[in-house]
Length: 74
Image 1 (cartoon, helix red, strand yellow):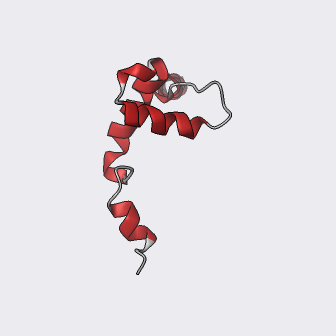
Image 2: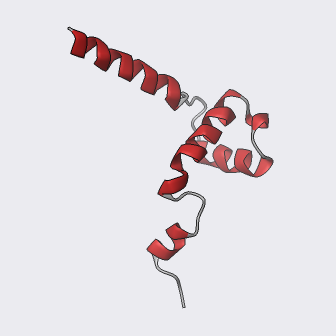
């Protein structure tokens, strides 16, 4: 008997409750792939596909937050 998708997602490290942790790991990986456990480095490398350039999301979030704050102040 196969599990439902909901059951599968509930038992994976990729569930919503771990999103912040995994995103932090990915940020570390982007800066230095050797900074994360080899299994995570392999997983994150597989996500990249044919892309050779990925921008760290934290930097993008900071720029967007500053832009939003500047607009609110104006």
